[in-house]
Image 1 (cartoon, helix red, strand yellow):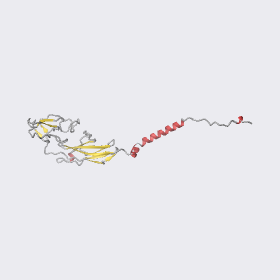
Image 2 (cartoon, rainbow, N blue to C red):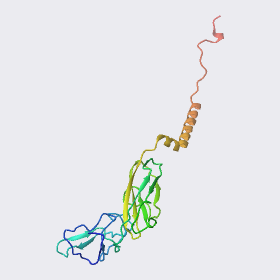
Image 3 (spheres, rainbow, N blue to C red):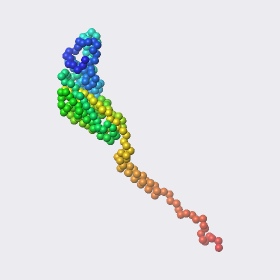
Image 4 (cartoon, one colour):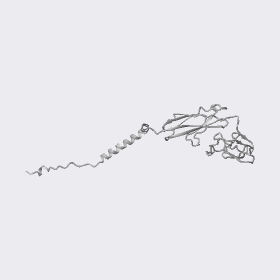
Length: 228
């Protein structure tokens, strides 16, 4: 039981109804008696400062009128829900899907839609390495280019937010391979030429400073020492 507006501290319900929170970023319910703060974001509310509309601490509630058990809403909402609203439908694509550290990947979330809002009203932000920390600010611009400095497979997330604060997340994968030898040589050609020139100069200096030999010594005695 989640995505509801609940007024009052307790909730009389079925003791077997244990789910009070949907997976992030759908979240839980609005509780009128909840007094927590919203300064962080993420499934564990540990990315700070980054308020996302959910309370940073869980809300423990008496779900069965003191008879059976205490329920916990781990992602209580800070403001009442517009129950007629629905979350946006995120869409993300990337081109190309494979590249090298010098590749500029184009990420596109323009296909994201919402039943109540136009596409232009939706905002997005990006997480380049799937660590739960958003690397860009919210923006109405749905495209972004990014390069990855090291080879590997990256999961890139986009979070979409509508005008009511509802959130949805989509991900894509990109593969970054090693830089080809030809590209490395081209990128560092100037440095290679400089190193080669220094080596040549050093060899010439050593050649000029090499030990020099005297004239060759002949085994034939001078003329005045020859027998008559």
